[in-house]
Image 1 (cartoon, one colour):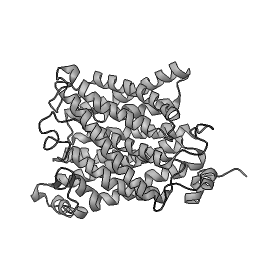
Image 2 (image 1 turned 60 degrees about the vertical axis):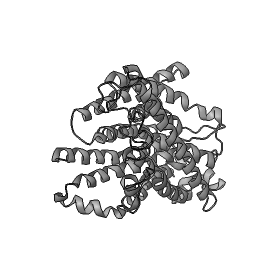
Image 3 (image 1 turned 90 degrees about the horizontal axis):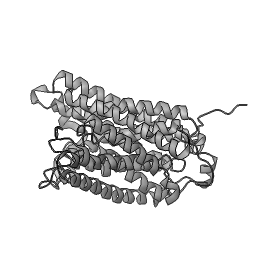
Image 4 (image 1 turned 135 degrees about the horizontal axis):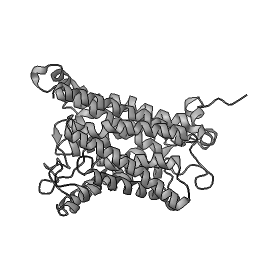
Length: 415
């Protein structure tokens, strides 16, 4: 890994880390006034908890010596001691490991933080910290190992006789994984008081737009940095990330205008995130025209999906399921349709003469990650629920979780 690529990857890692404070602004603006600080604290605390655990054990579970393809051996590089030593000793020739480990930490952090939007207004902060720690090690790191560490979902194991799935930046590892976990937590926690009966609108759309802008900016490092080299393929991913996101915004706004008569700023910001999510697994696989198509459809699908929580009766506070799970599933499956015959992975999708093999592999990968994330999250959630408890008291929820959990309020009341 030469100096230009090192600089690119470290810059990309910094951009990805910026996404988590951006997410805090995005989610904070979407929250109600009385819970904005708690919502932002969930994102910031993910940096603290996951960042430390990644060094201690998360990296080993993600990238360590495989244990039957299921996870990396937690003891293989406990505390990152071996890659630290080799990383500072260029004679070993493995300095890239330390840089990639740093890059991977930012992915683990943002994935955990994404889940928090589903549980706004009602989850204990202490329960969130415990959940974030357990989920990062037990769920995120093994799934990362499956997809990027040569584990279960690689050509060495489940896909040894099948076309290997394509996921350049985390459609499965990040968005499907976090989206399913969010749904499970929502079902365990139950609905907010007044859900479906009283308005629960975003309290500050300016923060939402600013957060969306920071997410979009950081996502170029998230997607293009995942190629690990500053070359033409990184440029392809960068361009696809731009146009898919723009198309996602337009798709959401068009549906809003046709359905509701208004194109909203919240819809614009949400469409941006839907487009970003959808292109995450596909940035290296599709052409710019394919990226536009993929993003536009993602905006429409996610806009339709966010309304399902009222019909199905689950309270996904800030639409994590409707955006991240739905757009993540669509982007992952769409690779099997729109992957070109000149992509860097070498396998084309159904619409480019590659047949259905890649499409089938993409679906299998998505289903496997959904099943594992659901089961593991349920076990973690139930363990917390029956020990320290998941939910704040009714009184604290009504009065405001910010003051109850943190002793603070976001805005001083006028005297």
